[in-house]
Length: 142
Image (cartoon, rainbow, N blue to C red; front, side):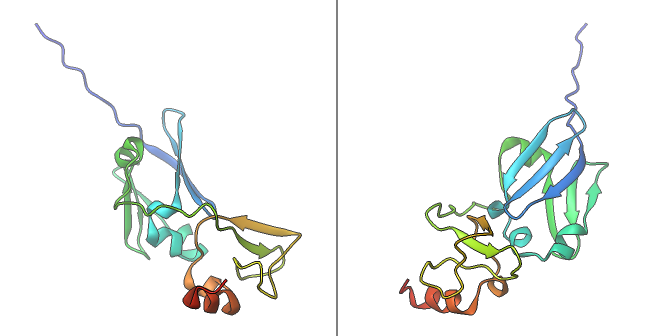
């Protein structure tokens, strides 16, 4: 007589999104952290759009209805994005003043913060980059 083994897929229990990461807690106690750069729709979504999600299949997947994004726990465990992730340029640091709402990348920008700032490596959404830095991005003069 043979005994069949059933492989249980851990289920997502909580989801946390930072500026740069998707962090999923699993029912078996593990946490998976992946770069948001793997999921452009999540990366470019607003905080409100990111905050609205639901679990699929009791936690086998996660769905964001407002941006039509679905991510399976199995894919996260395999380390696979829903598309081929673009590399993040680690030489570029985007900065946002603590009391500001737009990001800067060019050290020559008149508003580039030197102190009291938040930093990230992934490119902000188009509307989150300051006009001066955005213009320099288009011209590639910085």
